[in-house]
Length: 248
Image (cartoon, rainbow, N blue to C red; front, side):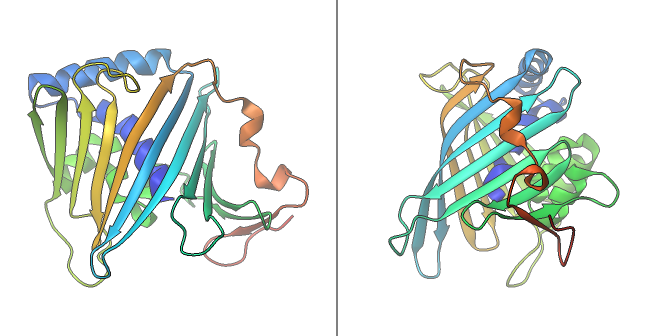
């Protein structure tokens, strides 16, 4: 689920950060133009999670697919497959965003967990329960929460975020550090001004997302049928979070 949120975040956060150096203004203008023409997005990426205590590194391949309809409804799927499983079975993690409702899917068991914010604010729900970086989608909340800096080299622009009020303890509820690397020039797989890498520390673990390909309005655009609710899929059971929920 973190990967789903992280990639979704990298799509949206730049449009929220309008102030700052000229480079930030350039990024905002580029994303504003992309937003006006956006109909579909397909992102292929890798994820590495480093656990420092046991020096454990988990690697996965992932795909994120997003569609916006003519009426403005947003749908997305996220698939993550562990490429170095501890046993012979490859772990598959799936997420679904269906018009503001979030699901975690177990395709083998045909079971889903449904996350539906009581106030209808999916962004606030994701920020609280999955990824505090979603606060970047709201400029005021981002400025209250993060100290943001921009640096550049020849190929990349680095957006660095540090929590203004770091949490402490064994399992802190928010991230302490994060960095997004954006392309200064178009590469083979990632267009100019698009995120090439997303890195953050959650608790003690380091998460690194590396983008392999980024396609906006491409030939392999998602179809609406890909985003069917589990409630509408034959044989699926759906439970609410955190306990109970509607079952079909």
